[in-house]
Length: 68
Image 1 (cartoon, rainbow, N blue to C red):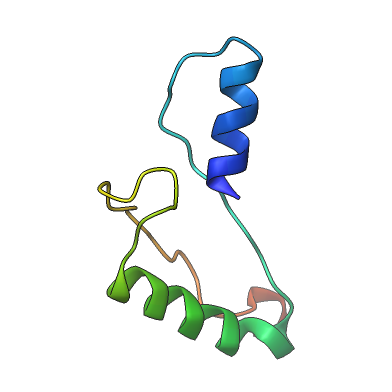
Image 2: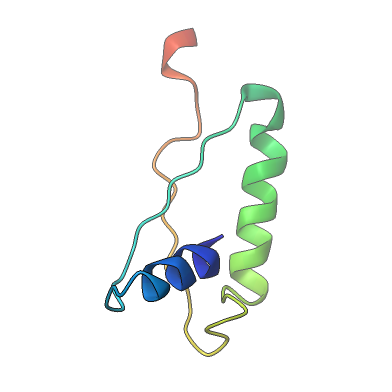
């Protein structure tokens, strides 16, 4: 997804910029989503367009504040 956005910005005449992408998920998928995220970042942590640049990843919250 990050590569697609970077390609779109480049075609629109934009300069290369660092970007932050945020995805959310429903409670039922949160465990799988977070496990896959950690696995991807641990194994390679790159994108196809920038295979030599590691992607910094931060997980802000792992719980639903509304259910507390």
